[in-house]
Amino acid sequence: MDVAESVADLDHPRQPEPATGGAPPRPGPRARGPWLVAGAVSAVLLLLANRYGYHRDELYFLLAGRHLDWGYVDQGPLVPALARLVDTVAPGSLLALRTPSALIAGGCVLLVAAIAREFGAGRGAQSFAAFLAGSSGLVLASGHLLSTTTVDMLVWLGAALCAVRLLRTGDTRWALGIGLVLGLGMLNKLLPALLAVGLLAGVAIAGPRPLLRDRRVLAAAGLFLLLAAPNLIWQAAHGFPQLSVAASISDGDSSYSGRLDALTLQFVIISPYAVPIWIAGLVALLRRPAWRAYRAMAWACLVVIGVVLIAGGKGYYDAPMLLVLTAAGAVVTAGWAARGASTLRRGLLVLGVLPLVAPNAVLLLPTLPADQLPAFVVEVNYDAGETIGWPAFADSVAAVHRALPAEQRSRAVILTGNYGEAGALARYGPARGLPPAYSGHNSMADFGRPPADADVVIAVGWDRPERLRAWFTEVDLAGQVDQRVDVENEENGGPIWVCTGLRRPWAQIWETEVRHAG
Image 1: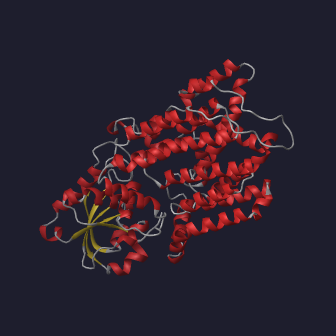
Image 2: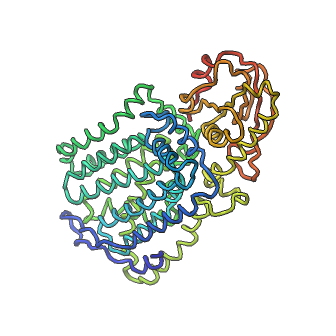
Image 3: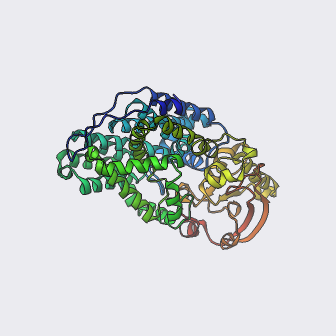
């Protein structure tokens, strides 16, 4: 079902007459359209999975999967474990690595449609909600890559569906579902705790407040803590390193971070087309009498979004809540399109798709040739540039390694500035005869440091040599990264240094000077 068919089938969701109380609308009928949209989304993502190459984070996950633990500096164990499982079953297969994400993306489309159905959406409105989710920047971008964001999106939407059903039915068994989903999500990131806080705050503000002392809700809180305990214990034992990463993000030292960027992202991460729709959904959840039971969800969204913006978190942290509002807004939009000059209104909805939704396919998916990628794509979508050129990056480092005198080449190691570079050299370096690569970035610092006698170092990912000269007596420019395509990313055109004469032992500088988070 395409968007024109979905819009043409928009109908009034069943609603009771406006009142100050009473039960919320019954769920709409089951629809086939969302399944068709979800299948199309997963199929497109799988077809495009092998274009370009690994993302730096995927290379990092593969490395982390070789060092399985209950936690890492910047994440939980779930995605590294998944990366290791997939790479064990299908070694070196990028398609296999990204298949879980493509399937999760389709699942998230179904969850958004199911949330809309809970709000009373008819078949057309459910399909419309599925289309908005399936064409959203969040679903397409995170569905293309294996990432913690992909799993986080599934966790938040799953918990949101349980919460909406709890609020509609009053059946507190759904609270156990919330605790289960969010607890498992804590093995991926600590962000589900923010959603838990948002949901509790929403109930405290808008009710029903008796939920806060219900025995099943309390049991759900216990289940959440039990499942989250392994990662929380690891974080506590290591001094909660994620706080350092969060502080770096708040300072704007990472992509998509900083308060202004986070605010801007709220209005584009689903699509500009969806902005008035999710705003309408928020207003309806706050003000529509028939939806009084769902008011806690609106306040949960406001609390979560407010915390992300005030704290300076990455702007996509709260994006699943925008999809929840979009689901509500699809119901409102369906009613709007079916009233009055319905043909004109439906026509306006269809006409808005091409300029406001279609660009997501170009900006967020590898639809253009890598060697012809316009600069504006990377400016809008930083991650696109981070999936191009890693084999050529390894070739550039290998050229410097081959040029070393034989005596130095036999004892050289590589020191990279970030985990993506180390991951790329772990993936592509052995075939090029490269020595091990080390990095102090995030949990890479825990995966090992250079041998004590390693005093010949090829350093890549260090734009300025000042830091290197604090560790070595000789720092010489030996080459440059050439990814053989004209793309702006963190590596292309960067210097490659050869460093000799280690001033102090690695054991003295590794933790205090080389290790860094962000």
